[in-house]
Image 1 (tube, rainbow, N blue to C red):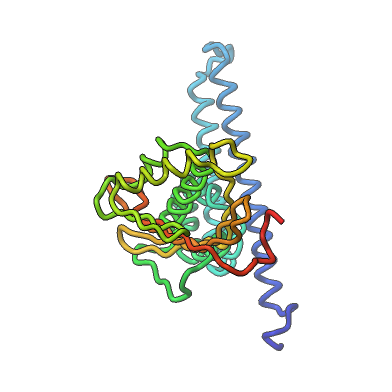
Image 2: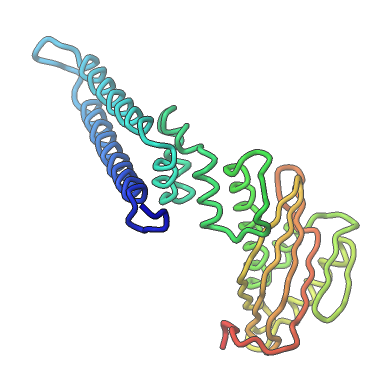
Length: 277
């Protein structure tokens, strides 16, 4: 059969296996919750048993049943072809995949599969370079990328809020940090950079009464090296400034990501896709 045929036997088997795995996971979760509720219910009952048995024996039976359910689910997953498991797990999001890895050893092995995390990474993020080969695997690379995306989003939330205190916490207190604005001004050193942001927030923009600046970002791309990362994006401001090309550089210090470089350049031509219209 032609490999390009969308109804090939391989495609049908993968689709069927994916559906079976999803159903299996759903059934396993429901059975586990039922066992947990039964155990909780028995714990709330009086510690007396008229039949001469002990309540502890009932608890042990429930626990054994839950363990058997977990083992049965894990055994069926182990029997699936790796590509089917990876394809099924690709439908889970970041939080669900992490929770799945904490259930038992078999689920942890399946949820930590590097192929599944690679698929999830390409689904959730724009890849700066297709040749990226993470040193510590795609799961670790996903976690670091998400942390960078979160701190970059926080940077623009601070701009919208106009909070100078929050902005001062986000910048690394070092003499080499740099801020280059669209006007061409270059500000080097922590004090000079924070003073510039204080001036920007005090000016504000028309309609914002001297507070934050409504800014939206698109086409965010992240590239990570050891201890450093840079982020490129398009930024739109709700004034007649047009489209900005922005580069932010972050460094990791004492368990936290700090911004060390911000470069914003305004594009002279009118952008037809300005989200503010």
